[in-house]
Length: 308
Ligand SMILES: *[C@@H]1O[C@H](CO)[C@@H](O)[C@H](O)[C@H]1NC(C)=O
Ligand SMILES: *[C@@H]1O[C@H](CO)[C@@H](O)[C@H](O)[C@H]1NC(C)=O
Ligand SMILES: *[C@@H]1O[C@H](CO)[C@@H](O)[C@H](O)[C@H]1NC(C)=O
Image (cartoon, rainbow, N blue to C red; front, side, top):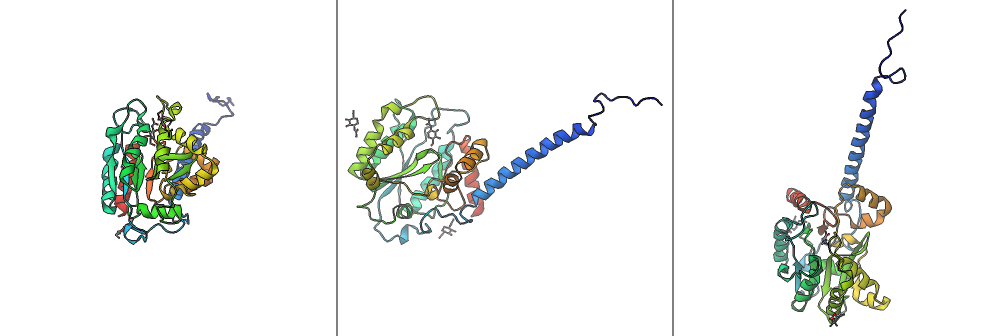
């Protein structure tokens, strides 16, 4: 009997193996993608699953707040003149401005686009300090918004956010700076400043941190400078003047977008992720660190419209 002709692949490698291996790889890949999407969907429901961003439900609107009405301004700007590529802010202003203006009007707040104030001698993000400083004499509270943020629950008033953060609505005895923390410490993308001498001095001192000014990277140094300044306050000054709510999602939620970085952070800092992840019902979404900001803002606004 003639010997069976040897295949090119030899005896030990049946031809099926050639099909199995890619199939196995493909199905593990699909499984990984499916579980990433399942994680994203799970985190998106954090509030349904019992997470509380505020000590009590922040559902009061401006009308039923007991303390006297305060003059509040939302201050923002979007610098679209520089920076292209994936981290581009191009088109972001058009996408969020209507959202912010409608919210401010509905609640009776000022809305200030301070892009005329941008100081070209520093990366544009630093000019948020000038923008807030310029409005401080005119309002009781200034609420700074980075350009890549969007109001996702317009029924939440800023007064109710402040009351939830501070535990009271007493303006005179209130801290001056309310800011949240993420994986990297304080995040200067969204913060409240109260009109006071301390606040003016803090903003001036922040602007004076020139050694942090940094060109040519996604980090311009303004956030690091704020962190440095807060860290250098005495414990007493910190407790009187700065308030950091425990729950980042009170007003600075980060959408969880499947990526290696998100997975790494979920595993290394599950509590911080949980406290800060964007979930349905949250007041604001902040696309910190995400590329394609315009796309994500449109996705979020579209989902909000669809759920109305
Ligand atoms: C906001 O309030 C309006 C009017 O009270 C209500 O119709 C709407 O369903 C509320 N939306 C959300 C997201 O709670
Ligand atoms: C900031 O720098 C200016 C100019 O050097 C100085 O006059 C001012 O006192 C500084 N302010 C603070 C709060 O550090
Ligand atoms: C400016 O701020 C935005 C919004 O937080 C951030 O995504 C961006 O990386 C910052 N740009 C620089 C140059 O720091």
